[in-house]
Image 1 (cartoon, helix red, strand yellow):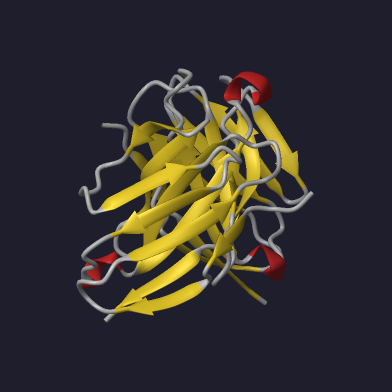
Image 2 (cartoon, chains in turn yellow, orange; image 1 turned 135 degrees about the horizontal axis):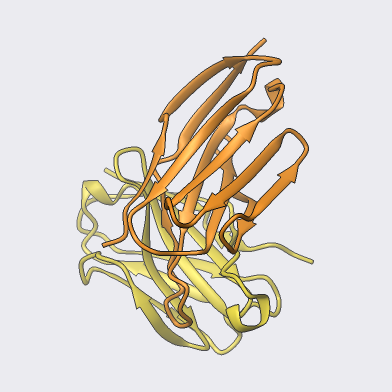
Length: 116
Length: 113
């Protein structure tokens, strides 16, 4: 069973640009979550999608957005990049809690974004 | 707002010793998760604890949950170098539709030969 695939793995952008990150979940998983990891703030929840609907959103500005497609693949976008957006962006997928009984996340390798 | 605190933040221990990482959380929840992260890598699920008194063991690691105390522990027995990593606990709310894990600060564990 293939794991969670994130692309690109590394990218460098400059302030003011925008970036789109992609995530392919484990086959059959309909929930996709995104987290930002930084040394200072740790792991912070961005948003979660299920069946193309955003079910939950973290405390991030509107520059951070996402979407999910009918095949459960997800993208997140960050517009007007700031230096503080430099981070490891982790995508995770999970089975429906009603089926699995718990929200066990399987994480991808992450996309490391550097903003110059 | 749910807060999850881990201690210690950094732990350096010798091979063969035992130690415990603590995870406290601020609101009622009976779902607690432990993850491991190796340097430069992603997070790997270790344990899922779903009820008060739950105990799970895998090799030299054992996790437990006390929902009344809002405390989970990750106990390391006879540590070996391969256990060097950062360990995170995470809590979610036990209601469907609120699929969000709140992570602790992480404990960076270094095992010294």
